[in-house]
Image (cartoon, rainbow, N blue to C red; front, side, top):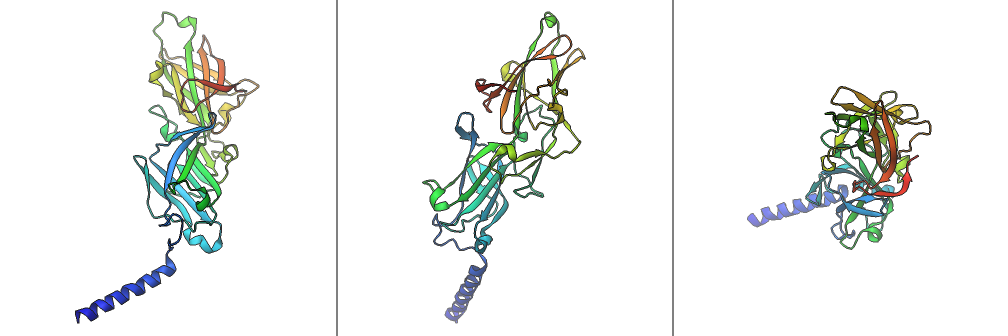
Length: 312
């Protein structure tokens, strides 16, 4: 009787497996052998044509099969978590086939609600005084990706994330009129930026992927003081809006004596492009901030100006 009972159990299990195979992806025969998607991440440094390790905590992942018959393999905003350099997904993600082209999109930081690859709304943190990491939106876009052709030797998908916003490092110097006076900088603010942006991560060109989504509402951003540079430098990540247009007060420096000094964008404007980092030198004078140059920089802020000169 036991034998008969186990026979029924085995038969039932086989039936369930057979039924399940009609509803679940079958990875057999895929490349890699188990059909699973595995990822490795890096962050692009386009000005140096190089990349460094990406250490973000999480990312959102999209996979879209080119064939309508393989849509069951599509993944929509699957969360991946960084475990000390090894990435794991919240649900299993499979390749539709070794030679099936797919579209791949990834972004970070991960957002839970209302996310579609073409329309990701990102609210840029306005208080970055404690650090800028939470404001750094990055993404990757791969189209016509064929696993058998494009995976690396370890059968891993390499995601080269790109910065989507603008990073500004501000270097301040005090004018002669402050010599011998006990006056210091208390706070630095970038004025009237786009507090919210819409990002289309299906567009490889960053400059065409990001748009301001705040309408007539603007946000001031408190910059982070870089203590490693003797407290004379500040940084922030933002997206340009009204405050970065000619004739507008772009930056305000608040001093310990209660005074505030502002820098006004000149008639010729300042070109600040998405995905780029800039170094701005300002001198605090008697009545205002005077510009001493704006330069394209390495995003990591290693202190070396890149070729390309002053921003216009």
